[in-house]
Length: 247
Ligand code: 6PG
Image 1 (cartoon, protein in one colour):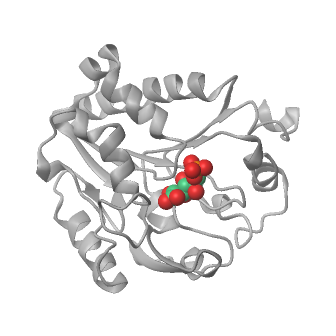
Image 2 (cartoon, protein in one colour):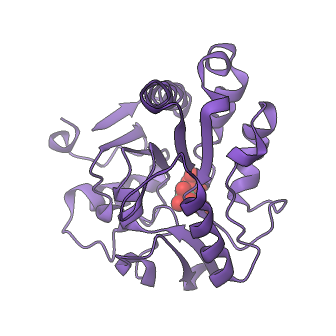
């Protein structure tokens, strides 16, 4: 499902609605909500809204939610590039959440150790449904100007991973070793919600939806979850999509 909103602010408000609705549905069904957060800058407005707006603050099931991340940069949790820090500053620091419910990727460690520790964290979380892959209630994803999502970048090794849940992924163009959930884990989620704003994303979105199926170039094409897939776009990001794609 693709929904287009006039502005990033309107998108953030609808994203907060959608996330809260899925959270409450998950808690009603199973007593908890497992959420993998996205990094980058786009989701910040939504995270802030959830924690600061009186209605969302009161209706979101903070005590029953387990917070994870879809990926992390190789930095400590107090580094400005940290996906964890962005979520902490905009949301997690503003509400009372049991520390045991915050499952940070320790990407400041050696990459292999960081990936192994995060796999252990996923495995030991009883609230996270598991079969061959852990099954998140909701995974939030961003979308890069060249089409990456999480830390699944075009032409990188992690795109081909079909077995491991979490891998270190070398991203040469950033000179960075990222830690990321793999496509099979993302596809096992009950809900996947992309939040995408900005004109700079428009062509890569067009390539993802309307171009050849070439996930090596357009990693978001790998994301075909068993559950519900939603793209929330602002008008700028959706501006290159054809009417057929949007209906
Ligand atoms: C990250 C994110 C990444 C992000 C996109 C979009 O760690 O950077 O997981 O996938 O969502 O790069 O970033 P913006 O929201 O800043 O455009």
